[in-house]
Image (cartoon, rainbow, N blue to C red; front, top):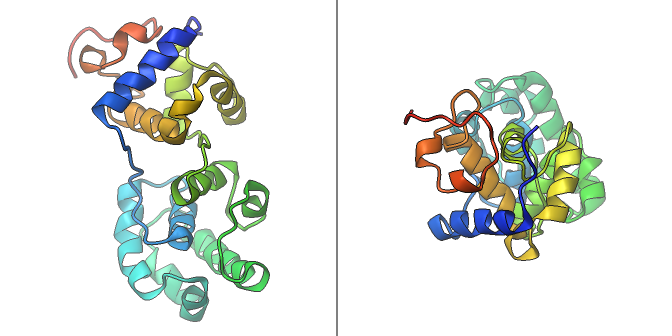
Amino acid sequence: MAKRMTNAAVDSFFQRLSDREPEPKGELNYVNPYTLLVAVVLSAQATDVGVNKATGPLFEVADTPEKMVALGLERVRDYIKTIGLFNSKAKNVIALSEILIREHDSIVPQDREELEKLPGVGRKTANVVLNMAFGQPTIAVDTHLFRVANRTGMASGKTPLAVELALEKRIPAKWMLHAHHWLILHGRYICKARKPVCPVCPVSDLCNFKDKTLEPA
């Protein structure tokens, strides 16, 4: 377990990431809160690139719950067949669309509890939607963020929820809106799982990871 990062280091960590990229964006393509919800549901155990290839054509014909339901299960499945677990995901997309129509006037709820009632939507998915679609300061812990939080000493935890709650206590409020994007992108492109590229990392001196790489990747 990495040594706990100081509060001052946490603040500096985000200041530097903010200086490099003031407005970080998620890499899933979407056109409205509904299509974002669908894209995040489809992204489970899949890459954003792979999801975007499938949802580009799909969202051209179905960008509302009504259009998705009208498209039908078989056609939705055909659009997303290149994505892992496409059979169950297609069922979830149709089912959550029907619930949005029936219970929410086709509007994506801005409430985590209501979002988590939808098929295929867990806490991480709900947090992504709340943050990206509605500007709520949530932390969506994926594998990249989980690794960065533990590896750097910013927030240790054995489960995604433990890390999420720890980060909420540690990250200054001024950084919370974009924090999960900065951490995910940092984990995806610099603090990689197999070999982090520590020599080019902008926050390497703040990080308490014991096994930093010495050579550029």
